[in-house]
Amino acid sequence: MQEDSANAKTVVDNTLTDGATLADDRTPIVGSLPVLPRGVATTLRTTVLPRISVIEKATPTVGGDPKPRYALAHQLGQGGVGDVIKAHDNDIERPVAIKRIRADAKSHATVMRFAEEVRTIGNLEHPNIVPIHDVGLDENGEYYFVMKYVHGETLESVIEKLREGNADYHARYGFERRVEIMVGILEAIAFAHANGVIHRDIKPANIMIGPYGEVMVMDWGLARKIKGDEPVQPLAQTLLEGTVPKRRLFETQVGTLLGTPAYMSPEQARGEKLTEKSDIYSLCMTFYELLTLTHPFESKTTLETMLAAVMTQHVPHAYEAGSATQPMVPADLSWFTQDGLQKDPALRFASVDDMVTRLRDRAEGVIPVQCRVTFMMMQVGKVRRAFAVRPFQSAVIVSVLVLWMLATTVYSVLRVLRG
Image 1 (cartoon, rainbow, N blue to C red):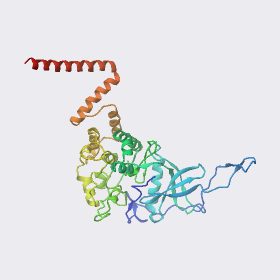
Image 2 (cartoon, rainbow, N blue to C red):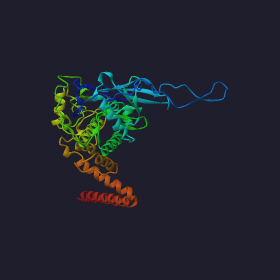
Image 3 (cartoon, helix red, strand yellow):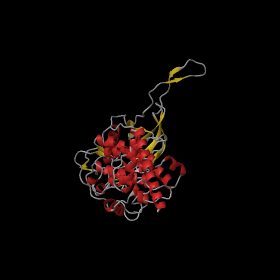
Image 4 (cartoon, helix red, strand yellow):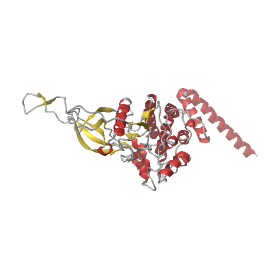
């Protein structure tokens, strides 16, 4: 099922009204929404492609009555300001997903953010980013855009089934497969960063896994350009008060506080200007949960305690997170997440490209030494690479070493026996 913004249940700040500012832009929005030409708002999009029809044994004819271009099926999800609906494209004959602004959330701010989402996704053509097919106005004059319908399930759903101990999912999603999924996510975000865009809401619920292994980064509604002036926002301490359902801390916030509390970076929680380093933190928090099947701050039940943990509480090593349904997380992957979850952005990976390189090098046995375990893994990697490059010579050397060790052992035993 295709989702929109954290399993489709987003908390909305009701102060974001027509007179408000864009959620992350303190420049007031003045004027009114575009005035549409007469008749445009009530024009229903119809099919345009001809069809071949055959009635009994008559000669085939080309024609056909126009039908509505998109036939709505059912709602896939609901976000902070929009709904995502599954529909059928009657012209191309394929399923699509349509996102539109909810009537109760329509405002200057939401329309402008909606338009920016369309332009952002439309300019990020990448195999791991959901593409936009069309944009328009429905018969009621409401804005919408049409996306590829992504078959599969969210990474959040995959993690939940792994957490439950589903044997089939554990067979399909071992640690190496999880690394492959992470590389796909990283490549999408690296492409966005190279094009000057940060996502700002990376989390398992915004990642789709297709039936053939496809990895797709969804929901770019909070994305923005990296360059340019971005005013600092005050911390939203009153957005959620008291103890709340845990799921709400894992859902996108739209309004004074932007993002998902459980996955946002410390600087995002403080309302500071964001860079690519913020996405790096969110990526590693997502990977941490995919590896360990748990969130390090899942015990937090208030916005205040969650944000405090994000800003100050150290994230334990992934290999320290015990699980009754899987083996211990490999040490090198644990260190990988640690390198991206540093509270100080300067101490994180320099770029998402560096993260991709590190995981690709890992597949070749090149592992940075950060503890005794990673030292041993690095040595094993060297032997593997040696066998791959010079298999005969390596086999000879290993054989000589084994014989030498065997001879040494036999000699020592004989000395002991002769007393």
